[in-house]
Length: 93
Image 1: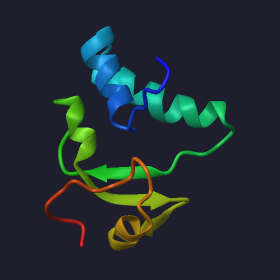
Image 2 (image 1 turned 180 degrees about the vertical axis):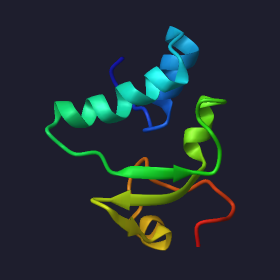
Image 3 (image 1 turned 45 degrees about the horizontal axis):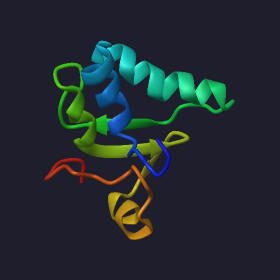
């Protein structure tokens, strides 16, 4: 699949819709397991909707925390961090 790139949200969606995993398993694989493989500790994202109900809800980011500190959403937009862009329309501020 040369030349194909995936956003951070597409991987769990493909695992659920294409492979048949549960949303919980897909989220575990792409977050905690990936962080452990890299020797990193997981930070976390606060969502507006439950990704266990619909895996595309991983796109509904309300807040982001890195190393226990809340990251300003405006800063995320200014720095254009790939895969970390809020698509929510409210809350968290």
